[in-house]
Image (spheres, rainbow, N blue to C red):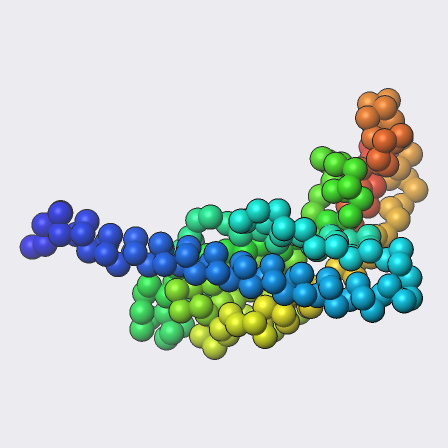
Length: 225
């Protein structure tokens, strides 16, 4: 029977080493996202300047684990998680022959992509909500799949065949950007904004506007009569 010490060594030399490799790979992948975001900003900014210089595009490198792309009223936020994840037994990837062939392939790093209103970040509206566009899971083989909004979750749902390369990084960013541009801020029903508290008026209205998100509209007290 294998000793406890040997079992510990086996797990360290397989699972722990794999997770460390995935993390290092994720740092490289996230750099690819930053490079593509910056390239997109430079390309589109140059083209938009001759049409309307008020439509601002700006890339922000926020450190090792976050990057932002502002395009007019929308901002995409890319956030790399520092941990590596496994999946429950009933998750769809756990039934794939690709995973069964090598169990270490199921351990994935994570990049999350959110859509915020640019004003939410500009005016530091802490109550505003960002919409999750997609969760990008990437394994040790640099294969990936995406959970989240369509079409990203439809186009990239097979970890067996999708590999994270420059072409796919560009496709992911472009599809996410199109989702943001086509997801408009909708005015809420008038009954949902009948009231405003003094605190909201004092803390929000004059400085930055009423707390807002694309998904929920204006976050106000609703008349329950």
